[in-house]
Length: 182
Image (cartoon, rainbow, N blue to C red; front, side, top):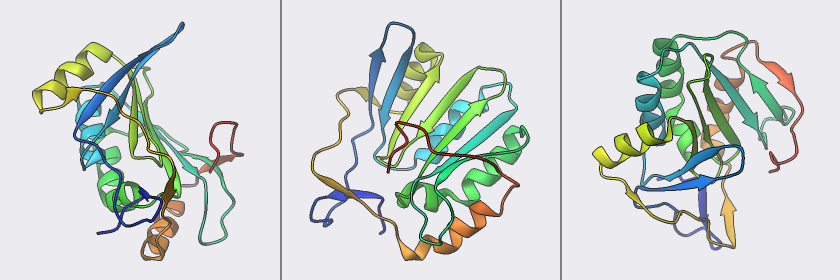
């Protein structure tokens, strides 16, 4: 099986035993979620409870096809059904290839989910509701962290998926920002 993040020798995948960790800052709180697998269905489960519509930000850190690294925002809000179709269509690419981050946001401000190239999900919004939902499916509170050193994988097997995602919309481009770094 292909994986996006591995130990330094790239012999084994780095993953978590379905953990969440609440992070509190002066101006906001968020959850840091480490899944054993299947991050896209979890994001969609959270979104299903929201009013929508939704937007996507595809942060391309490294392209194997020569596309410019940057932030690619979906041009129009989309329904939950359209979001679900897009995410499931490209699920393996998002879950198994480390060349990007994926942001999913409710246009009404109900929540935002950042699925980064370390296989973390950062969840913003109704933290208590997210924790209750996670507990219902067997997640437990715990520390989620990336071992150092580690490596990211950009699999040639997903080059056609990179191209398909690039062609899915007339994305609105902006340069990478500090903190997006590859």
